[in-house]
Image (cartoon, rainbow, N blue to C red; front, side, top):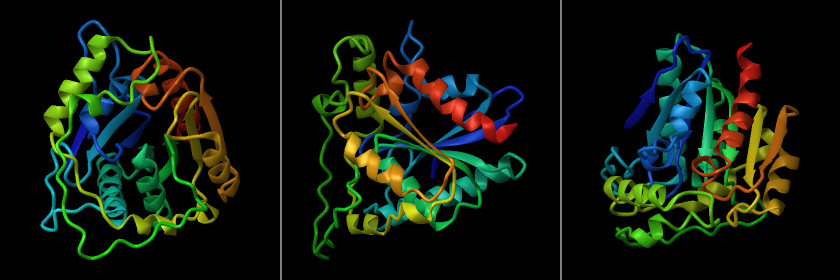
Amino acid sequence: MAVWEKKANNAKGAILLIHGRTYSSLPNFDLQVEGEDLSFMDGITEQGYNTYALDLRGHGGTPRDSTQWLSPDKAAKDILNVLNWISKENNNINVHLFGFSMGTVSTLLATQKNDKDIASLTLFGFGKDLDKIIPEQKNDVQLKKIVNTPEHAASDFITPGNISQKAIDAYVEMGLKYDPVKTDWRNYHELNSIDPSIITTPVLILQGELDPYSPTEKQVKLFTRLKTADKSWVVISGGDHAAFLETPRKHFIHSLTSFIDRFNE
């Protein structure tokens, strides 16, 4: 597994970032653009956290396994293994977990399977309807290995004026470099086992005001069904599905670190 790392001076905690379905960690979480401060990893590290970002199987620096497929349960298992490793690397502290887009459901699955190494869970871009049952796939489903395109790589940047064209171009270049072919996912029905009513870990839900993939009605179902009483829901004003790379970046990072700082006091 490829795990990217940035260390803080006198770190007060650690956090693991999990990307979405198509693009891996570096385009999303460590976008480097000359003259612009956009790296999410840099922003969190500056707030005092050792920051890690995992490339799930078939994404970025992590190759596909022998089956050529990724599934939600595989992703959850890999997240838990990396969390355990990070905890040991940081003197057995609990680690904050952050899931973006498809990463929200992967991290939810991981948390309900085993939360012993998880200090808190933050979800951004949650888009699953908890009342919708996903049918099982047929066993003869074929690999697609769809080639990514510049148009697809730029598709999350939907709010005019929120990010420069230079930054969009840099994201597209990085996205196609690290993820030229879409990872093939299967067994989405494994997401049917997500059950917020058994999650006792503190949870922060971040929602982009203008994010079409995570409408309010889906956040309501998640928020109200979480068992934990320690939960917050913050709407990032002016933010869309790429809010942590865009104009609301400071608000986004402040909202995240304000929540997790409480657990390091």
